[in-house]
Length: 127
Image: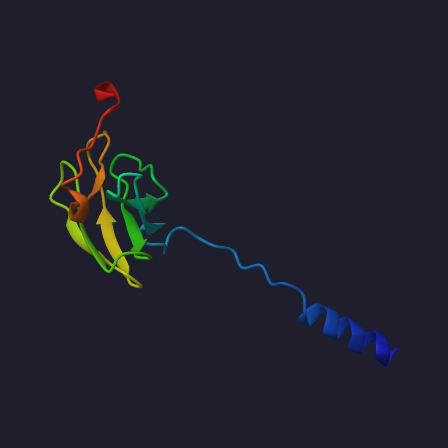
């Protein structure tokens, strides 16, 4: 009998505890983003590089408050802006940059790396 009680006690204490989560105390939604820098050389010896944000696209609801957390993986430092806003910042290798976002107008807001601003951005209609 004692063995059954001890076994039941051990079994009960090692079960995964489920704790209900409430959105009432939750702050902004968080979106995790990482960066990557890719460098190569063309056949004629020209160096080309690109700085990539991953995920490449995020979606927000109109008026939604979001904390965009960007972890710098490659490249020592890259400054950026978010097109058609006053948002500017800097991403550093090995550090997390937190960008609070809230857009009241629907649309597309591109995150642009200023470090690589000399590269011409081609739109699909330009191809």
